[in-house]
Image (cartoon, rainbow, N blue to C red; front, side):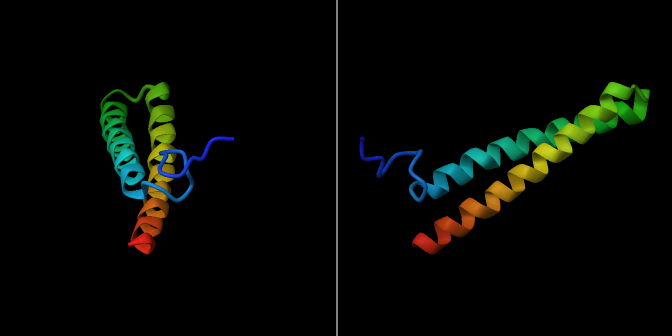
Length: 77
């Protein structure tokens, strides 16, 4: 088995890099959430309401990931 130390996939390495990746994902999720919320308010199409719910869940999950990687990264320094 290969040593994964220093790898992006190692559990405790590169936490700030992982934080950055999740920051991009939460930004995209929030942008999509706001766009779909605005579209739903203007057109009231049901699929847009579903999109708002999906992107809300995605953004919430990603915020949790941000918190986790930030705490691990701070504790490593």
